[in-house]
Amino acid sequence: MTVLVVENLEVRYGAVRAVRGLSLTVEPGEIVGLIGPNGAGKSSTLHAIMGAAPVAAGDVRLAGASLVGRKPEDVARSGIALVPEGRRIFGELSVEENLRLGLAGRRSQAGADDAVERAYELFPIVRDFRRRTAGALSGGQQQQLAIARALVAEPDVLLLDEPSLGLAPRIVDVVFDALAAIRESGLAVLLVEQRAQRTVALADRCHVLSNGELRLTLDRDDAADTEKLVAAYFS
Amino acid sequence: MRRPALLAQLAAPCALVVAVALLGTLVSRSSEGYFVDSLVKVAIVVALYVFIGNSGVLSFGHVSFVALGAWTAGVLSVPTAEKPAIMPNLAHFLRGTTVGNVPSLLLAALAGGVFALVVGLALMRLSGLAAGIATFGVLEITHNVLRYYEKIGPGLNTFSSVPETTGLWQASIGALIAIGVAFAYQRSRFGRMLRATREDAPAASAVGISVYRQRLGAFVLSGVLAGLAGGLYVHLLPMNTESLYLDLTFVTLAMLVVGGATSLWGAVVGALAVSALDSFLAQAENGVKVFGGTLDLPAGTRLVVVGVLMALVLILRPAGLTGGREFSLPRWRRP
Image 1 (tube, rainbow over the protein chains, first blue to last red):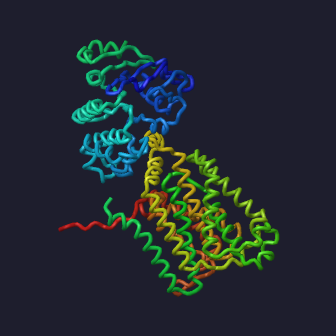
Image 2 (cartoon, chains in turn brown, red):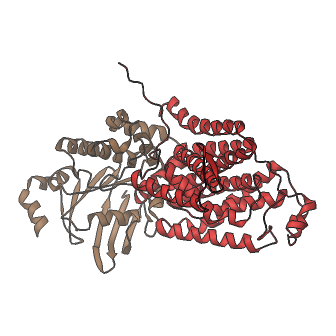
């Protein structure tokens, strides 16, 4: 069953139409990529899903229920977790405190400790540094913490906004491997990225956005087709 | 965090309060009042800290809750026979009601909390400058209502005849309660969520935290503590609405800023450090003997010096004397 549906979404900031008539769906156990140049409307789409950007038209539905007009904290508690661009971890709190804050998004507190344990298993480095101040972690470690923080809420849908931004190639591998494992666990993942080739190779489907509009959809086999990727970006 | 480190975070401010109380027993009767006053200030500043320190939202209105607490405890503890003399226009049900010391303090705390809830429901959607100005408005409203509405208190008169039960004992217990509550709150899930909103409100709401609700909870809790502190205050010395207005707002905020607004340790250190300076200057304004000579400062020096001190701390050490950190034991290095 389709868990996340975005239908004819339109996001407007004043006179600027950041997203124009975007439709997409994400199923459980599936990664859908959203790629495109800067200003294409990728982050705006995620913010609109979270209720943090104004939806001028269209609909966003989670398991059939519309999310439009709801506050970000309500959206988070209804089963969508966002890993924001730039990590946005709480630098002055400890790593463990950061992780436990993710529990605020749970629908029930039962099983919270198991969820924390699973997040630690997925990202052992987060467990190792759990007593440290989160601001003292490296960028890659903070990114793993940010994903772990989203996962402890046990959402149905995971949204990620450029998780590989500014990371060393080796750490990008860690993050992408973790995303593949998260998909295996049955989550629906919507991944916004700039690393087009890697995203196309990982995702089940990849939508190319430009100027707020969906230009084309690529599948995994297109990852090797550099010409097609370049054309998609610069058409 | 390890248990001994956590224990030290609570024990250090408590020990400081106890030390000040013990020191207060050694000095003359006339100087003792300054020690008691400083302990009541600790309670007020800790109340401020619970909201401002954890939320990062400024409030100029907390002295309203202190004032309402003082009014509640004061009106309810003036002996019935003396009420008509100082409060001739008091409402009928208040005229006949007198309660003991402890109940008056509990009711003061309740009044502070209820008032904070009413104010907070409306104002906790604001942050930054807007919150500061709006809470300032609350202070003005409260001040004028207490000043001119004689059905609930002495109005322009001084609140005399309130039993002076706040000595070193009562003040230090009050301060310790405030510290204990503030510590328990900041260690709780709710304290953690509020501090997350202080660091990054949009990120906090993205993980499912309601910024409004967390702020409101802390505002009410700090209103309860401020009300309690107001009760302690009115039982300490005869006061009027002017004692619970701009000067007190300024001095207590300065204490919080000087100590370090983001930690409980900072709130307590700041309250005591500025109190010590403030008391000394207050005495010096009336002439005080120092090192054989007489120091006689012009009236008004007190707040000028406190103002300059606050500015200096903000410039030289913006996070306050404690750096806005909790107390931590020095680490032993192995050779």
